[in-house]
Image 1 (cartoon, rainbow, N blue to C red):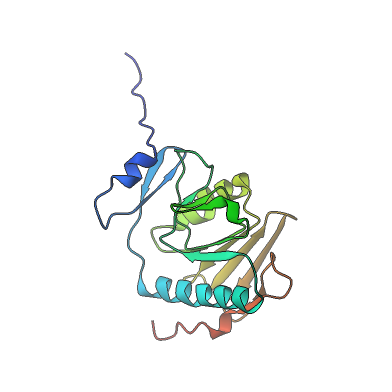
Image 2: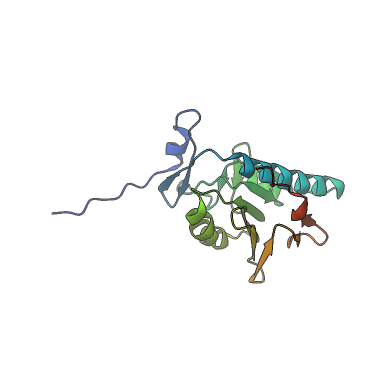
Amino acid sequence: MPLLKEQRYTIDYIYNLPDGERAELIDGQIYNMTPPRRKHQKISSLLHFEIVSYIKSKGGSCEAYAAPFAVFLNNDQYTYVEPDISVICDKSKLDEYGCNGAPDWVIEIVSPSSKRMDYFTKLFKYREAGVREYWIVDPERNQIMIYNFEDGDILTHIFSDTVKVGIYEDLYIDFSQIQLDDM
């Protein structure tokens, strides 16, 4: 008896999802996404604001995008992700659909349903694709994991720390300013 062949999806599946439904595609496998919680969105908004403000104040050429923003990580039809925040410095990677290839910096904010994806699956995919820096922001653990793939550093911070961004010389994000006590 022949083995059942596992279905390999393409980006067409993502484009044909019903309105309001979101999923990511990694190596042809579909990963459905649940709507983010309020705490997740607050952290994302504050981090995105800090990053965009910094880039603008420096007259920088990088662009920062908050999810939902399409990243065709392998620049193929089998991998499509929506990082919570993507910073792209090579504008040739950008088109009307999103980013084709690896962003320079990716931030994922851990949700209860995304732990395995953020800590394992995406960690390896981002490193393999050429992302320079990857942050995993985990409000439940009060922790920020920073993977600087260029020099192999892995740093751990907590939400009371001021954290240096590796791809910039003088960008620091003060996590103590992210007030989550009322949530």
